[in-house]
Length: 196
Image 1 (tube, rainbow, N blue to C red):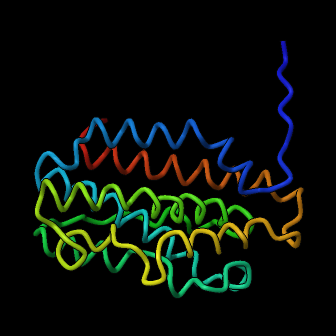
Image 2: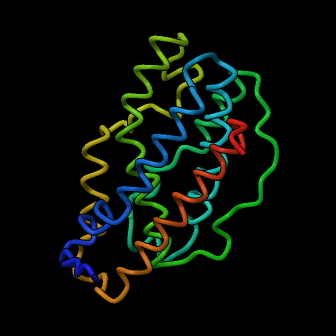
């Protein structure tokens, strides 16, 4: 039996629906990795975050991405993650950038995953403060809200995604890019948490 799924007119709604299981997989990996059990586990999470953010910020130099998401200067957490690793005395090692061959429209899927994680980071920040004594100025900068606030910046990004200028035939590539981004972050979490 074949199930027919009605496609949403809004790309952001389609992304949310079609990547829901991948999002849940990230939650499961975080639960297994127990990043708030101690600072060493947390540093392993930040190392994964750092390399993923390097992948994301690699995309920022693409003029097509700059045109699609004109406020890139307020986004990204690579520098914050690196500073947190220094605070924690943890060396993240070297990783090849995973987005070297990624361009529009797939790059928007990668950005969707990164930007969506900023919303969930509010809960992670509370946990980092409560259990590990970290803060937005020490060890948990990568979880801090954007100066304008998480929701404002997220809604603006969703607005960019849902503009009619992004052709519907490109939507599949955006969803595929999001799936690739989830796979990359999942791979990093597994490696740094020692789950492989």
